Picture: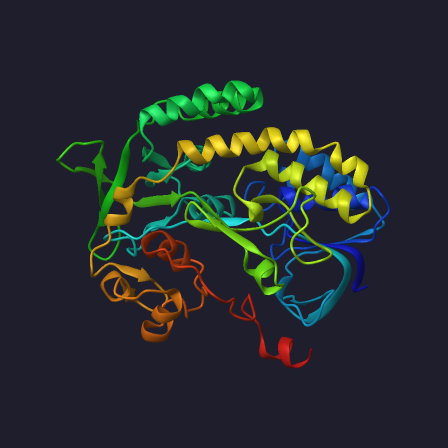
Length: 421
């Protein structure tokens, strides 16, 4: 069937929570996700493989519900008309019809250019984590995990559990900000428990605060990196096979923009604008999770439940969750303040440093332009297969640009998936 009362785009924590809430009140629910297993990045591998009981309980209920249809390995391409999404599977394509739509499209890593960042062996932090969870061999490999945010700790723990040798965790935030954030965890005791568990898993690994990667070096593949530690003049060399580097997350807003939903820009990233009921500026379309602003799994779950209840007509029940959401919004605000990116990171790229990896466009070419549109027209920046998802986040910080349009289809598509619509 291709008609749903509530269609959920994304099967991470926010999407699962939204689908669970809507299905519990009798709505016919469809869950679309381009991965073979539910869970998103935070619960990658499927909820059944997670220690978090919330994932197991929700997915168990959803599997048993006769009013829930799961659509794995299904990518959203575009919206042919209001109330419709064109999707593609590995073997076919279809148009899905919905009364209410919940966007739970999550976030992706922010990668910032620095000399040597295109060397084989330099990866996204979450990217290497996902690869290792999928069976990519890292046993015995020397890995530096660098960038900013709690994700670095989770990545390091995963890689160490897979047999990697973690050379160091390099965090750009200063000690004062980290200490302030640690004290703030008293307001969320569950996070203290998580922090202690991670600390136990990461014992003995150097944690270099107030430090960042200056450059990566190697003859054809990564062999070493240079790091800047605090205010030291001298750079420190670390030998490694992999550099897993990530500077926070960026909301995935492409589908929301394609639907005409309003967005807001703050602190160098764009997110979907929603009201207190998770409703976007487009009637019948809600957004929950990292798409509204990066805040972690607990905020994503709260927003997902509110969106699912609202989409299924349970307004009173949704309002009862506002206090829980507000609690985790405060945590998200503390997280954002503590791990705000230092200005030195924006000065690492030299004129010959590639910024747009798909089209090999360098910083020296881009910094002379005044807008994303001008750069695309003159240099093809953002015109490659990733459709600006990698360079877009970097150029927003480096030059203050915001893409002025969404390229269709929003995911790679077979010609037959479009012409047969």
